[in-house]
Length: 115
Image (cartoon, helix red, strand yellow):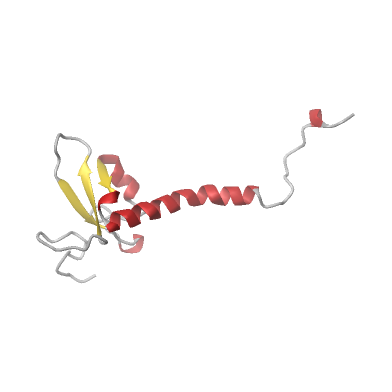
């Protein structure tokens, strides 16, 4: 990635850069009385420099030490929706497998059989 006016090649935001709200998310350290906020670019996982920027793959690790203000920016809201979709996908896949209509392979409970 080439250098731009808003961020360097690693995605670190240039001081004084004017960003669209669709491009970043605001994070604050969980510890401390009034910690300063930090702005991180929201990236696709293939372009994310984990530790400098944020994507759906590394958002959980950011949440360990930081409060992520997803609702403050368009980028944050997009990231929250992507995370919710990703987290719901394994559960819905399992439900689809359970409702596949194929007979189960578990042994039947003989106490329920009629004499």
